[in-house]
Length: 308
Image (cartoon, rainbow, N blue to C red; front, side):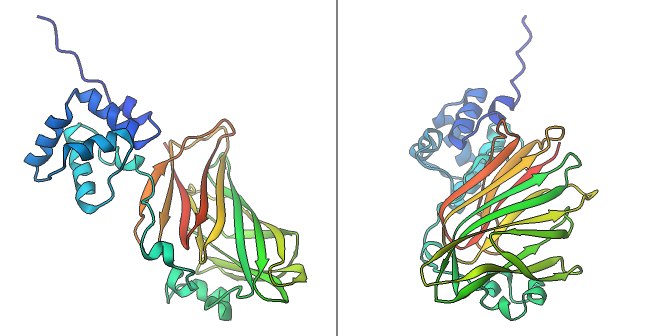
């Protein structure tokens, strides 16, 4: 009697780029029909229609509601997948409701009333940059062979909201695995003031634009945060945006000698809010990953990575 063939591992599922493709690969690996999957979900107390399962694997819809997310958790068990395998493929939840209607958030709403950022922002904590709007932001982060974040290059297009704006207030917060910047290099302007709170892990800088902007006039400012090495590996970078912008591009470059095992983009409504969704990002030939947000709404956007 021939020995039963061993079931293929989840590698084919993990190699996919989109949720629908991963789900189809997982179902094919178990050789189950959608009707059988629906029945097994029902046995576990989750009622999902055949149409919904079909839409998921076709990419016409995705799990978002609590019931659907619970079904996805059970589905991973039914398909004999490690926990979070399919969750990791979910794209950020489609914004709706107040998220779309919110014209802007105060720093207190985004950071929290008791945020340690208050110490370095001072009077600017309540309403920083009232006379200038950020139209677009591009950030490039550089992670070295020691897995340390060594620099962040930022380029922003600004627009004067009122006549006479000649400065921009920027803030950088340090998270676990990173170190405080030791230098800020400004292009398209000049560094006027730098306030550092090592204990809280925040640094704020006032950048002079070189001229006073007229209302609706635009300007481009570029600045680079430079950090020293750290023995604790860096694991993510994120930007907190109080107002809607036309675009946000975040790109993270890794040293070719040490590449992460997985990378994800994510979003949160504010500092203490849960992550609304993650999507796995492929590493491109330039040894980088990127996340692009068109017409991004107020909130937190970031990229995280996991080391092998």
